[in-house]
Amino acid sequence: MFWVALLAMTTSCSSVEDKVELAIAEGDHDRAIQLLWAAAVDSQCPERGLHLIRRAEVQQVVARDDEAIESVTKAVTACPNLIQAYWTRAQLHAKAGRRQDAINDAREAAPAVPQATLLQHQLEDELAAEAAAQKKAQDLVESLGGQLDLDAEPMALEDSSPAQLARQVPLPMHLDYGVTQSVKSPISFEMSWVELLSFRGHATSESYSLVRKLEVPKMDRALPLYYRLLMSNQRLPMRFLVNRRGDVLTAEWHRDGPDRGMRPQMLGPEIQGMLKRKRVYDPGSQGVRSPGESWNGEDVRIVDGRPIAIQYSSTAQGWELLHGIRVLRVKSRLTGNGYTGTEEAWMHPTTSVAVRWSRRVAYEVTRARVTEAWQEETVGTLLSVHGLQ
Image (cartoon, rainbow, N blue to C red; front, side, top):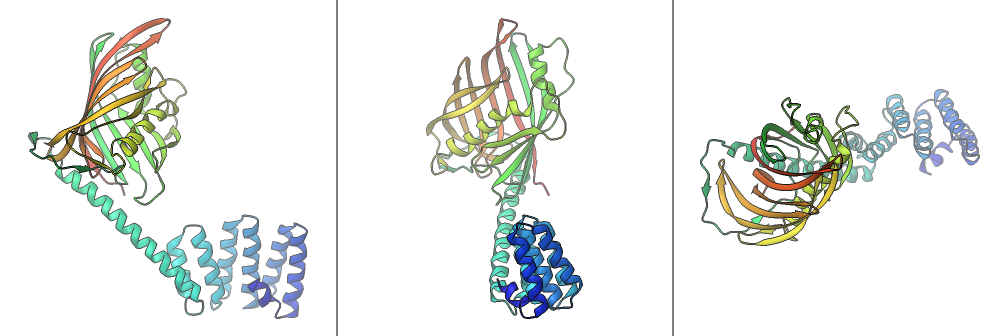
């Protein structure tokens, strides 16, 4: 290796390197690391810095990357004129994803190391592209939030142009929905709450987190136990790690939560179904839908703690102006094992945000060998939207 050749320039360095190579050959990397530290302490620059760089190489072999960074940083501190120390640290920072730190070190090494100039420019281009993507995403969020006017009168639009539907919301984004649910059976009651959805991540990342919670009021104990168990735990924030395909990779409490009633792992399939429907089915292969167009797909609903596969057929009804926002109204029919219903969503195409949604469904819940027929209607309205810093 390049460093071995440099160390071999002196008899003492050669002797140290022979001992280091023997220790490595015997699988004793800890001894090799100790030998290189002792050699660094007993030497002067530039040999001291070279020993520390070699030490970092051995630490990387045994996956002690943080310690490797520390070793090279000691080399930079001890021998600030040793260009190869900056270049080595730049590569370690780049490997760890610390791109700005890598750029800073590559800039120091660039006058003597052509590869450092290439790395610097590559990382600067990546950061610039990501900053542009993030700004574009946040501009969309701010634009949507600026248009939202809950007092604006709804209006049907004479427009048959197609919509380019986004496959996920811009990141990061926080949405608040006011939700009202009217249950018709097995007993009649109504409840309202606020649903909070925080999509957390970077516009260019391969995954993101969705944190969800419901601000549910205190519930009357006369309400069915099934409903109270279903709703009460959702007061606590749940976190879902999601990849770019809409797969929920992990589902857990954002902090601590109970192991009874509705839990993140139980709700995960429904969250995934919602995200995949938004990403895969509704936009179609090109992400374009037009008024009058129909399509089919799959979704998931959680009933009595179990996921129910849902088939849906959707039709784009047309364009409307709702709460000051131009939206595409989509109506769907839902069918599954013991589950039927209709759903409407007023979608803002470029952000994949529903400005309003409504769902009327019927399903069955079995408790203590007694089957209850549930009928409910739920309406959600976007109350606020903003980006996250």
